[in-house]
Length: 218
Image (cartoon, rainbow, N blue to C red; front, side, top):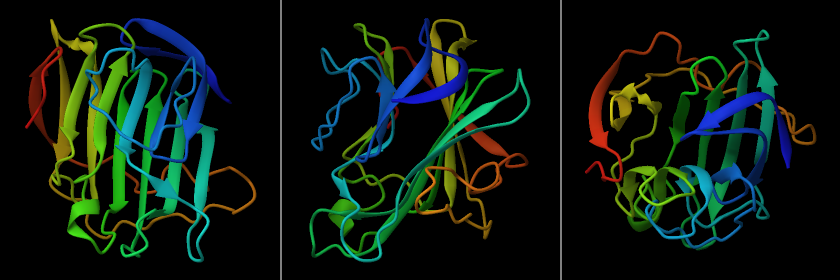
């Protein structure tokens, strides 16, 4: 498991340690390393954060790895996880994808950022074979942006706000595009991201969509 360096609240529970799966998934409590993604409303799923839960691998030439870092000043720290140059286990899809999840201490927001999402196979790109969202480990405590839907785009981000952002509900915000912001290169053996996040999202203007608790944004 990885130490966040601060207490992070997800759907009413606070955590200081996280597990990280190579399959585009992280969470708290008992690790889930399943390559088979399921819906965020599945019974018994546990407390998970899924920027791009899919069957990824890092053992073929050209793939990267999974890196994490805690950065920032006390009280406003960020825990960043990057899946860098992940490849599909379907060897006919040879394109690499890079994405990250960022947990914010002061707001308990979660930011999903997508640098590249094209594997070379439409059925395995842009979220078409992935789960995207968060779950809190209890019935009805989840928000799902997409499940096996190719609705994501390279160079974009999603912001997951906590439930109290809208009384009785959740919000996920998305931006129209991040342009040509540079992607940082992590040190292969360090398990650390270089810099404060791969896409530099502080000034991104986001459009907002709303979902009630336990509903799917489509």
